[in-house]
Image 1: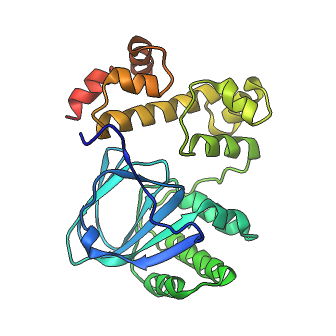
Image 2: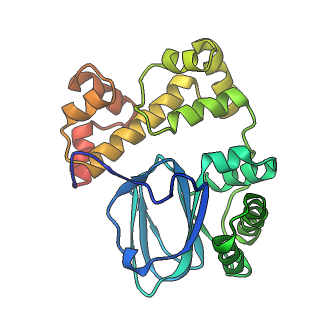
Length: 269
């Protein structure tokens, strides 16, 4: 356990929408943290070690891409010397792009925590070019090529259908913001200018889960992060997630995980 709060890092200047830099070997070992409002892709061409994201550990086998979504808590332990690049992308960079294929490919790779690649190929060259490019249109073209090479050269990646329903996507985006997760479907339905019933029907059609079930997934994930990465008490975590008391939170947690928060905490101490 570390502290009362999970560290939030912001490594991207306010005016920048995309940044590429060579991997800093002084960051071989990091503490658990979140990112502030951006997606991080880490291309590793030479190193070994492990990457832990939301409590799940993945071995580093190069070359590979680590995918760290902004809502996730992660840290790594890598062995120097490390060769690779770190790519930071703000959502606005994707929103401003007229190339819908870029957003589709980002959605595709964002379903994974790590992608193992067959060979380095042209990827390091594309990232080196991106690191020196300031023109956003040129950055888009290079970024598109980078994503295409990842999807082309992966060893293990499942082909999945991209989600196109706007209401569902906006619901997930709300859940993925850095704000507090609210345990009420009606709250999100109101923000989306729809009814809870309609939101739930869309979620069921797209994801085969009701809005309540999807919300529960996010609440349980956030609860696990807080239990795993902080030294807050179960009661404090319950309150922060919008539960009236520890008992209601414990029942909710057990309903979806099969164990109580206290039991989960003991298993991960």
